[in-house]
Figure 1: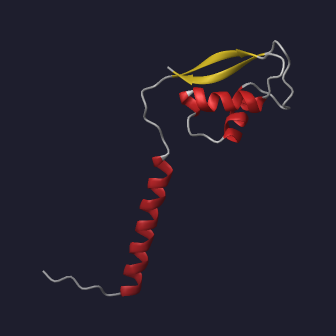
Figure 2 (figure 1 turned 90 degrees about the horizontal axis):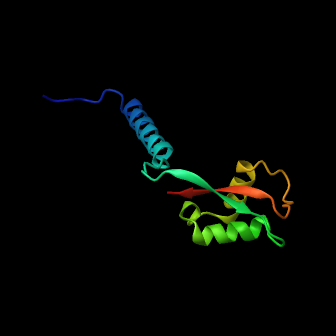
Figure 3 (figure 1 turned 30 degrees about the vertical axis):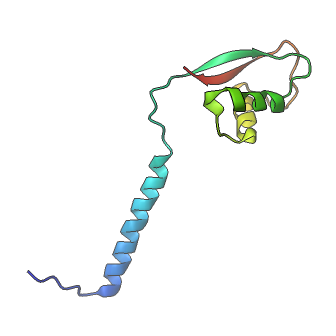
Length: 101
């Protein structure tokens, strides 16, 4: 059986589109985590002198959930989770911080 490519330009274009779709699918689905670890939260009480930056630095080094994450991402995540629109934390305020169990 001898296969012959009739239109070489259309063949190459089709192959490139196919590879593009495969690469795009790999990128979109490779970021998913299929870990069996369960996400939960811990309560952190704000003390005098605490800032989102210092809390994020501490979580970056001591919390598996935030290992190898950019500190700006951690701050944004904590702000979003706790509905904090400005960085003003009040002494005695409780915030939630994600952790893995």
